Image 1 (cartoon, helix red, strand yellow):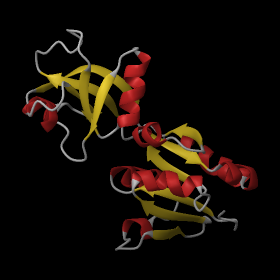
Image 2 (spheres, rainbow, N blue to C red):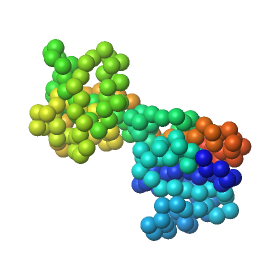
Image 3 (cartoon, one colour):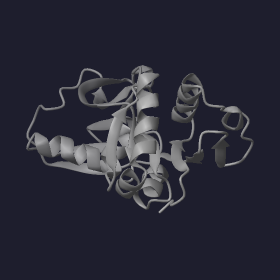
Image 4 (cartoon, rainbow, N blue to C red):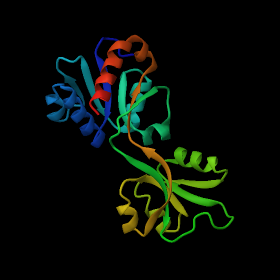
Length: 211
């Protein structure tokens, strides 16, 4: 448990990190360390009792769950895939995209009676989506470019994050059905929420007021 009065917040490296830093700047915080971070992964916001930890998305959840970070900013995609023991307290609205089922353009995915095969980086999200439809599917986990799977006839479709759909189109695929919306969320460790309630709620209020 991060026990001192400083709030330690884990940010997902990359786009969500940049958007969160911009939000902190709107609040009026000194983000100079966050802008000029070099290779450092733990940074301070001077005068605000806030420490920022930069991490990969799945690790943000791990650090918040284990209480070494009080709060985290992470995409809903990571929350839906990994779950965990934390409070999801705020939708920051940026990093918007969606999970979608995509297939070869012109294909009727639900036609026929055989068990369909789905390639994805997100097996838990995919499994829940099809279970809700009462469908059995075979799930193949892919680490890289999931668009390859239908092109190589490894799968009937994919479940992946879609922003513009350009990559799908360029590979002869099309969105068949939306699965769920995604955006950046704030998560909080349950023990931190008790011990640092006022400070965390004040920070959350400032974040929400500047969205």
